[in-house]
Amino acid sequence: MNPIRFSDLCAQGLVKGQRVFIRADLNVPLDSQGNITEDTRIRASVPCIQMALDAGAAVMVTSHLGRPTEGEFRPEDSLALVAQRLGEMMKRDVPLVSNWVDGVSVQPGELVLLENCRLNMGEKKNSEALARKLAVLCDIFVHDAFGTAHRAEASTYGIAQYAKTACAGPLLAAEMDAISIALTHPGRPLVAIVAGSKVSTKLTILKALASNVDQLIVGGGIANTFMLAAGINIGKSLAERELLPEARAVMDAMRARGAEVPIPTDVVTAKTFSAGAPATVKYASNIEDDDLILDIGPETTHRLAAQLKLAGTIVWNGPVGVFEFEAFSKGTEGIARAIASSAAFSIAGGGDTVAAIAKYGIEHQVDYISTGGGAFLEVLEGKTLPAFEILQKRAAST
Image (cartoon, rainbow, N blue to C red; front, side, top):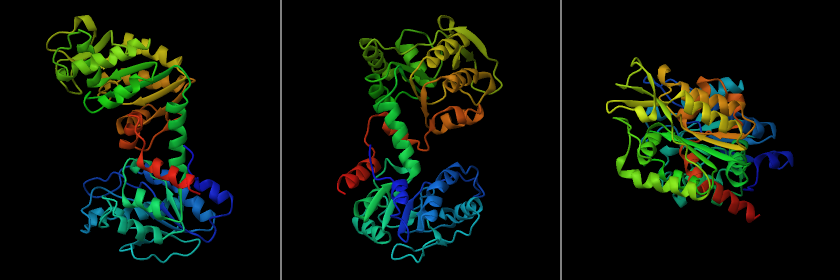
């Protein structure tokens, strides 16, 4: 993937005095009172904004927040608190501009935040009329919101079609580079960890990875379905029995390539799903009909950790157990620490995965932590993201 990079334009002195429109991902979580509870996405967006200011640009930034109804402003949809937090981080005033589609007043060295772009009529459906209006606002469009890269909307795709110059910001470029290393030119063995409650939500990912990876580690409810497909009693554990043929097909595809879907040999069970439920380690052959499997066992954890330490590339999406409950967190912790100590190139993504990385304090030992949930999953499925596609096209046409 070789789009025009904003950092290159800055280095070449092509940004000074230009109107730069940055599509950032500032969609931060809010509590019931509307306060920002976690600001990672704002912090991740600062380098691109600062890069534009340092290069002498007139800088406009926009983002979506939540799921507003187009054309119907509500106070809870406003980026006002985001503007305040961004200003605190950058130690400068960040004015918030409403009703900005028909024109924005901003001078070189200035920064403005444009109100929630999903309030604009035609944003979600990538209206050509709206996209052309957005393109007129700027000389350079910078896509720096990987979390929206799987959506073709007016502020992510349409504007890139019509802007004078369209390029990838440093955050998006870093995602592209990490994905290319992990999936296009991986060091071998390539190990993927895919976990979650349901096979159905990640079936296409499992099928896509089965043709490429050397080892496919499954966890959570997904692992239960695969255990059942392997003929193991899983008690009353969460599983999708109607997808047993699909699970067997994935295992067969891996086996045909000399690869593997490791099936847990021991697990941690409980009789009820609760943080205080007594945890019991059992061999997979001893699972009782009233057992719930809530984590992989120490033997399985040790075996998988040893394999991860020998990997060349690791792709991680999802904790392997109910890591929010301390008694059922050891499997995920063991996997996390094995990834941290491995010499492999590691890329991780997904909200629960990022939460586990933070819980075990290994942020600096994972090579790349993706900022996009849905976009990261679509990449794992082998899809070409709309943002990557249009930026590639624009680069090829220059």
